Image 1: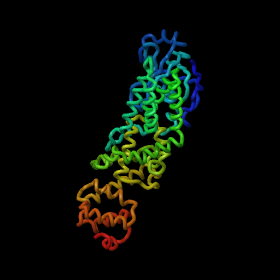
Image 2: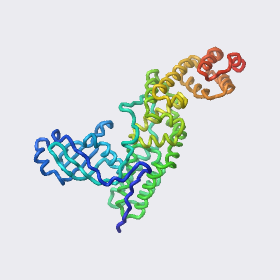
Image 3: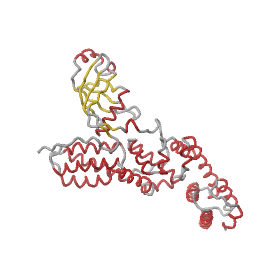
Image 4: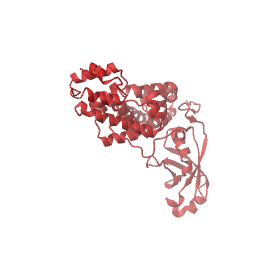
Length: 408
């Protein structure tokens, strides 16, 4: 039985385009395995099979090595790197196979057919080079561990001569439920590897699974998928046990400054969308094609800020990195002013600040009375000292006499 499939061009809606053939320049022939016999190699190179493979180097370099037989002959030219990575990511692989179209003394031209190109590599703002988040990290999410297990088991089952179809489908259904919540490049690669293996099958149920996986990829890139992903990131993830563990982590002033600098230097719009438009935030993060480690860092940074600083004004976020940095520093200074009033407990001062920044005056004084009774606020500091800090920060605007009438 042979199943003829229409070539799928748009794996993720809006991000993939048809590009049936690419040509890439290969440089560095004088520095690698064929250097000593370069002239002889070049004279017979045209038409030979060549394999391009992502090189194991730093993410920022994105090098792609070129092999002919057992020889490493060079690297894809820097000007062609975007095309090479777009093709690999669009096809869900780290390898391209083709042939040498032309050969000169110091360079080669590689050509191959590709199914699609992932435009996110070239059109999406990436994290700044050297970006680091050094603050508290959420524990690795349990669903990511489960996805790794499911993906690995399914790939192993599909590699066997006789596939346990029923067992595979049980894992596959669980995988499809969880896969939309992992936006990492590793998970996209996993989905594409599964898709190619499933498309080579003759078993009807596995071919149906290939169709379902294609549909899943298309839904993830659409508005409905981004809405579900955004709700999870903005509401369910910050409320998870992994995120709640970050509430009790009090960091040093140095680390707090580093966290705020990392937040302020996130790509333009990412932090603002996190606070104002969860769907667009999910779309931005999904399109950045980050590694699992980077996704974990970005989400940990934003969740820590939510838990320990609170939202920033939209006008501040629209003002660029300098204004964000200044606002974060002002908030940090406010916490330090509140800290002695809360018996030196910085975590308590942060919790109080989060609760009262958008509260009404009566709600604030009621909370103060409750915290004094619970011995979380010093009774000696709950009047003028606390009023002055909140009044100067614009959080509680009524007069001191009004405050003293309300706070017992």
